[in-house]
Structure formats: C-alpha cells, structure tokens
Length: 313
Image (cartoon, rainbow, N blue to C red):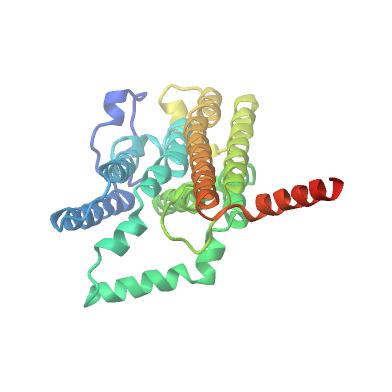
C-alpha cells in the first residue's frame, strides 16, 4: 500500500480520469494487448474481403478501453482509498466489461483470422482442444459461476477476506484480475455466439441473469443498511479524505444496487431478444418444411379424421 499514491482530496470526475503512475499496471497492459490482437484479426479479414461485423469490433474495443480506464487511470488510486470507488471498479470489471468483450465474439474471430499454417496452426489446434476440454466445460458451468459471484460479494466482505487481500498491491491487483475472470466465466455461456464446450438453453441463460441480479442487489441493500464498516482497511484513508466511512460504504451499496443492475437488465433484454428471434426462426423453418414436405403429425391426424368420417357414413 505504501508504494501507491493515495489521493489527499475527495475525488472529482476530472481527477478520476487523470493518468496516474501505477505500481502494477497488469490489466491496462492486458487491455492494450487484447485490443491490438483483436484489431489485427479484424483488419486481416477486411483486407481479404471477408466480412466481420463492425459493431462487434466496436463492442470489444469499448470493453478494452473501459478495462484500461478503470484500472489504469487515477480511479485506480482512489480504489485504494475509498470503498465506493473500489466497488465501482468491481462492478465494472464483473458486469460491464465482460459483456462488451464477449459480444465482440473474439473466439470466432480467432478461428477465422488465424492462418492455417505455421504457428497459427498450433493456435487453432489449441483452440479446438480447449473447446473439447472437460475443464473448459466445467469452468463455463453455472455451478462454478454462481459460487464465484457469491464469494466475490458475500464471502469476500462478510468473511473478512477483503482486509488481508487488499493490504498489498499484489493482493489488490490479483483481486481485480479475479473479478474480471469471474465476470467472463459468467458472461460467456450467457451471451457468447462463439463455439463453446457448453451450450445453455435460453431459459437457463435468463435464469442465470436473474440469479446474478438478485445476488448483488441484496448485497447492495445490506451495505446500505450496515451500521459498521465491513472493510477496515478503507476506514483510515476515507477519514483522511474528509469522508465518513459509513456514508462511503452506503454509497458503495447504492452502486451495487443501482449501477450493478443496469448491465444485468441489458443482458436480460439481449437474452430474451435472442430467445424470441431463435423461436421465430424455428417456427418459420418448420412452416417451410411443412409446406414443402407436409406435416407428418397433421397429416396423420387428418387421415384419422377421414377414417372416422368414412366409418360413420
């Protein structure tokens, strides 16, 4: 903690967006590498006349920009001092950035843009092996994603794991990396159009989104109603900034309850839209098959009615 510049004044929007020197800029570097690699793949497809959706490129790049901003600007320094800012970072890393990255379909872009010779062939083989892996299937299972969400909110703060982890720069950074990984493991099976080792039903996806929304909404209400600080490490820096730690903690709870719900609502709308679109496409395809080849069930029922009529006459 002593190697991190801790602000000595309450934050403003301009100060949040100010570039700052960080002791361990791991995620900003990751964001830059992801953006450069994705752009290289998209440009390769465009140069060869093979289409790649611009909106997916914009979505992925927005996720990279958000990742670099929330962990690479002065907001990161304030995250060492204020619980509300750290909660904002956590919510952004878990619920805002992963959907943007997943909607960019990086897996599909990887398969389409990677050369099928030389080192590219090794990358493709690794990607296909990962798709068939039981470990990947387990990692993308909701039986892992939901417990991770429970730990990230309830276990981390209510079981007093946050204080020892956040007491060092390494722990703080690893926790942010963990938040991002947990968000990706949740968003991938729910939103991804890439070929995955698991494929959830639309109902299962909607249920997962509802469960995730309830988890952090109840946690936010709990924070707003708490009368004592949950993370003692934020108490002294918050007081130094002239802010009441309890009020700052209530602000963190308000963010978990409100800001955390916005990405969840958008995810739910997207899931329901895909559900309706897929059901509509299946119904249209079934009607076309019936027009071309007949409907076996309907034909059998009509034959049954015809035989009954003949028997009566």
